[in-house]
Length: 233
Image 1 (spheres, rainbow, N blue to C red):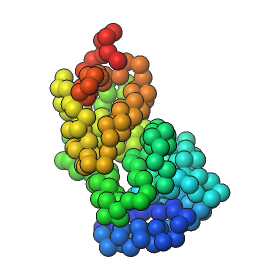
Image 2 (cartoon, one colour):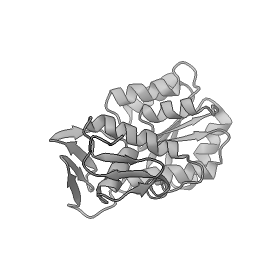
Image 3 (cartoon, rainbow, N blue to C red):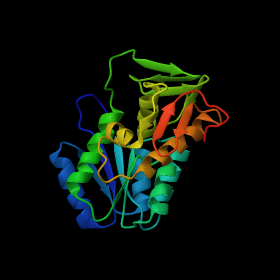
Image 4 (cartoon, one colour):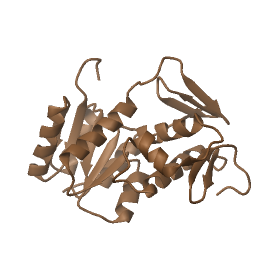
């Protein structure tokens, strides 16, 4: 995106009324919206053009949303993704997050809520801190200006949400942070999200950091950034 240009959102949704409604609400907030109505065209658009965020229905014709997400992440495309689906099964929600989605909404949803979530994600994805701010601990280095992270010199590929969650923990070493605080300060809202959302993202970060990840689980409470011990879960 060129500085000053509107942020671009790709909406891949096969139900035209829902797609049009999403487009109207996003356009009101200044977003530039492109719509696709099946998985093939949605994947093609995502691969060819540059978007700041993708709203992706799961139950799409031709290629479903989870497969689109899987292919984009496999190609190291980490454009933020919000899944929208009629399914209300936790397995589907967890699968979407494990594939690298940043958020998840179950139909029927309020267009205003969707817009709020989109704005929260793109706000987190933008440069929000002073140049040069960085965090370093236990072999992990995070540049808050460029939003790049590395572990023992190797680049980490993180979603926008994973980056902010890890940075939030790193900035408060040794402090036990409740899941509710993480939801409020990383996601920017907590009413419609369960703590499982936090747990899945933590698991994804741990997978990328490896077996010695410096994230300690405090059962029934939350997480803290500190060197692991043999008793950590």
